[in-house]
Length: 630
Ligand SMILES: Cc1cc2nc3c(=O)[nH]c(=O)nc-3n(C[C@H](O)[C@H](O)[C@H](O)COP(=O)(O)OP(=O)(O)OC[C@H]3O[C@@H](n4cnc5c(N)ncnc54)[C@H](O)[C@@H]3O)c2cc1C
Image (cartoon, rainbow, N blue to C red; front, top):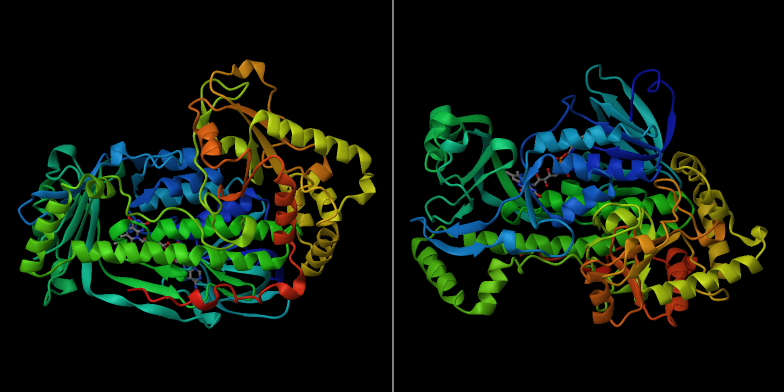
């Protein structure tokens, strides 16, 4: 990462992507773009090295996203894993429990992690140091923006001096939080409402012996609902609802804070780092895209924290949009691909928001009789094993899946559109099992049984030999043998180039075998449990982060041993020989060996649709665009 200093600010500058806001979502987005070689400028109004303690927990999907950004080790060093979460009534009696230590959704990480937001943000920003093509301008705010046909013009201001300067960008990603200026400048409104009751959130450091409530606990006390939990690195969090008539000024007095936290942690041995009063919201932006401007994170949606999903949803936004943007900028996909961002992310986010709101209704009951009824009912229904399992196993959390978007057939069917599991596998040259994602690369990946992938590789090799290099599309030739940063420069092909590339892709679709992938696809060969890794070929992959398409060179190939049989079982259950995964680990298609040709053609058509058939910018979500949030 290069800091932005004068004279950089003096002249009009061009950049591929401007990320507005370097909160957790902006910082992660910049890391994901950086890892894909995208020329990026991040502007952040604040000059502090990190943000404030607000988000406290994240899930397994979030860890998987950090993993994609190459940040897993840094982030994992900052988190703790809670064993359980309990819902207790006013008297401290448990009426529902989530057995976190017994849950494994199969995505390669425990279902819940706690972290300290300032430390997390520091780790995310440190990750940017890996990329020369990512610049961070601290103390710089977006003032306004407008767009013409092929660029966004941003007016930025140095907050210390008040000096303004201008940048032109191909795309702008508004990660500037709840009061997003990007959103306002793009003329996008919000739908939904805010909760009437304010909450006090207290974060601090507690000695272990000071902790009185040791587990993550939702205190469903109708007089004052609260959430309390030990966090990462000796931190402790208490969040409490304010009662009618209580004022912020009164509650923020140190003696008030001490009295409020006292049932949960000894105030004498609890150092308060931060006590802030918040209002929670259930709001979604009417559109998440306006032309070349996109909204992510709190700029696009805000939900109450009862399911701990506000930030997690923003991280999913970043994971969804970043690889699509990189493909478009590199000329490997038509800009229409970017419409699938909102089409995929909005319904999932709204489902998460609604579940959070429903959970809040259980948790926040303010009426004594309703609370008694709730406690009795929840205790009673949990004697039904299926219901008990539903609660204990966290099955009420919406699954990671997209209804419509970039997937075979355009909509979810069976496993298509869902997140693929991440088991550990054995691979030649590595000691011990490694998580699958480490071997998938940063592009598309095709997994399958040896006979299926071998057949495909033979067909590809034969087709390659038959075709002269000059027949290969320019975009593929450009992308094949170059390091990520160089490709980013090549990616500076403007949309006219993208359109030409799209034409090239269309001409080919349908008359070449489908195994002729329209983008680089790494082949991952799944060998059954018991196979000796040393009997397999070593991985055949390019430099880290490098993608090779078959048309630009040999297909990358990795042979793995499915040590626990998870992958073989998945293929069997879905009656598939092969599964094609997107770069964000969602299933694009499942196929038999005979049907894989069609998948290749389908992907080619999806990345390069016939121009007149595609929706216009911002036309992403159709009638679902503004859902009711109740
Ligand atoms: C009490 C509380 C508890 C929560 N707990 C959880 C939880 O456990 N798990 C969870 O997932 N979520 C939780 N959340 C939600 C979570 O905190 C937010 O969803 C998350 O912080 C949003 O991140 P963001 O990067 O989108 O926005 P922000 O964190 O708000 O970052 C926006 C950044 O943009 C910068 N900025 C703003 N305007 C400009 C401008 N014009 N120019 C340049 N920069 C600008 C800001 O300085 C800031 O750094 C909680 C929220 C609260 C209030």
